[in-house]
Image 1 (cartoon, helix red, strand yellow):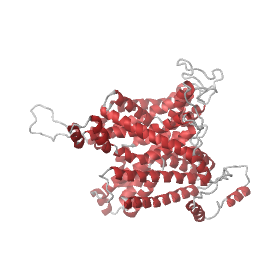
Image 2 (tube, rainbow over the protein chains, first blue to last red):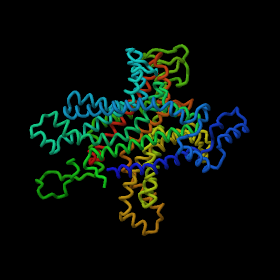
Image 3 (cartoon, rainbow over the protein chains, first blue to last red):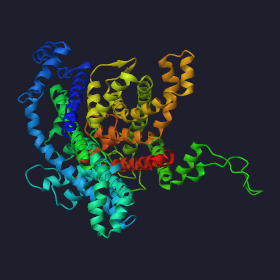
Length: 306
Length: 315
């Protein structure tokens, strides 16, 4: 078990390295830079600015400088927000993004699992059909349409929640978390439903029923353990979906998180910020996949560590 | 699924006078299964209607989507007036703007999916046919890119191309709309590439490929003339899903303000405009959002239908 965890952790290092290399060279292969877009600046000045940030050094040397910094948790200066470096900007935005993202992941898993079980137990009943409808909406309607719709209904018409504000109150968090959770609620509930239907037909569940354990204990203690495995396996990809969504949700609800920084840094061609955020997101997804694999190994005796 | 098993000709047990059962090809069987899926068939018709409306509907209007009608500013919904869904605060016809935006969204979705299918089949066929360390390397790269959130990849490619000054022959790769198109296509090819590679691996040792090799074709010819064409069919089942993802990717980028550039508009950029003005006029959001959602619903049902019909093992 421990050797497996260690091996998988070490195995993710080359992936992270490759991610560094790919993003760095993808960014720099194309001509054009952060200072070249502005036509009112003289070429001499552009040259000076680029020299100041070592943008005219040989590419491998730039990569080495940057990579050396990454190893020391220094992601370089921000080219546009001159008073900050990238690590500081991430430190400002990350707690907010993590808060929204973590609540959304928690909500989507819980609600998705409950809806899926309810749908599987009462197939073609009212709960099943409404869960199916929610799943269809969540899969088909993009969150940048759902978000503003929720703003209209709960913010403008009912006036229960703020439209787009960010402070310490819980009300500000309800709509963004709900919007971000919906696509994953949809996917998890579908996954859970089909897997539960399959598990409910297996022999060990029938045996449990035949032994006379109550229906609820059969479902929650015996069937759920087997049926939840696809959902556990989906948690890694769900993290990637949540990150994609957070970029949009933070724009919809004007939340000062990393997603906002990322969209802005992209428009400004703020290389170090773009690469810092890409690396961070990649590391989060890789870590989530790692945790998912280990959790699967712990929960599912059929997964072996070789 | 009983229609798949065709009875052999001249079945001895068949009563006299009964018509001989006719065998049907797997494709026909799949097409019949698809036709029995009412939701998917209805979706096809709705989608076709929306596509026709977007491309031919604007000809029914005597004005263009950018024309401002100063007599009717912020006109309400009146289905029998010149502006069926009203106008915005500049007097532009709302329905016409949405139809025009649909042209851009649908075209980008369709061609984005098409290009991504081509890239994925060539890439997958190369990796699968050549095999060895090249296969490992190519698929490892796909795995890494697949683990990135798709938005990130799309944004990165879009940004790299924009303002890069790169040209491919007469095509300016750095123009906002072409770089958007490339970003969409390059975000989507990853998953189908994995599927195409699987198919290529199973084709590698088939007799006709061996014959081609024995006949002296070089690997590149074999990949492009034998492996790739025979890998397309496994990817094509996912084509509606690719169109869906292409439309979503395009509209997300446009919504974030790094997509289509004026004077063009797409559903994404219209939703962006509408979302900024939900307090004054909800229609600006609801109309493009409704069209986009309708198309995505249709594509979802079609995807499910295609998968059930062509890939019965999946069920």
